[in-house]
Length: 256
Image 1: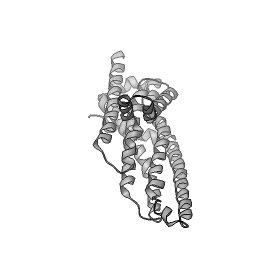
Image 2: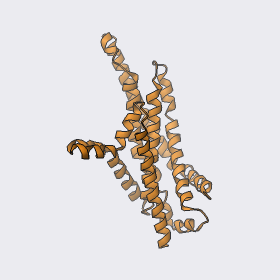
Image 3: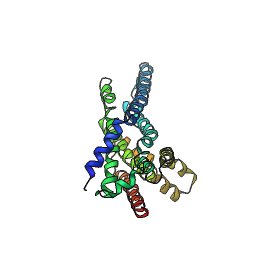
Image 4: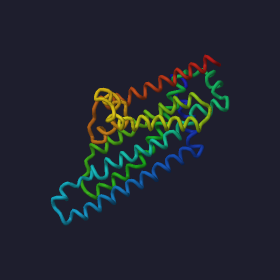
């Protein structure tokens, strides 16, 4: 893919030359750190109460009280911050008129799209890496089941890729960054809460709706259960919106 590295390097530099990446990473770590502190504090409170009841103490599980809720909380934070990463990927270039110049370079549309996608995904990896010390602190509180920890990070990374591809597609449709961020957030939120409506429909339709929900597939991974169906869902979700982005770029090139 000719030109991939050039686009990747350009987008990564744009993230860190401007305050966008620093603001997004800082907000993510600040809010995630608060959730981690709240979960650990709740675990400490439960442990204090359990000191008077041995039977209750046997039911306290660090994974259920801290690890899985923390992964779910990080997913919610990502839901809010990812549109801020993707809103400018194509919208800014369309607003400034640079998109026409970009599409005339001897660079394939696939390289342009993947360069922007991988650069954004790397920012997500950096954000998630900043939370790793939190789990290392848990080692001082007791034994840690690494299955849900690894599964939780995998689910967050797959979710990040899925929502980046969604935001990338929306950004390719408009030159207004605010509109791009707003639509990306609304659609991401819809895929997040879709499973909540499955109980109001019939069994067959409810199953189909629940299988389209991001939250439904993240839940199994957060438990440390690696299912091919869950991973395949995220891969297909990401591939689908990357495909739509390609069609959008081709349409823009054709109109130009």
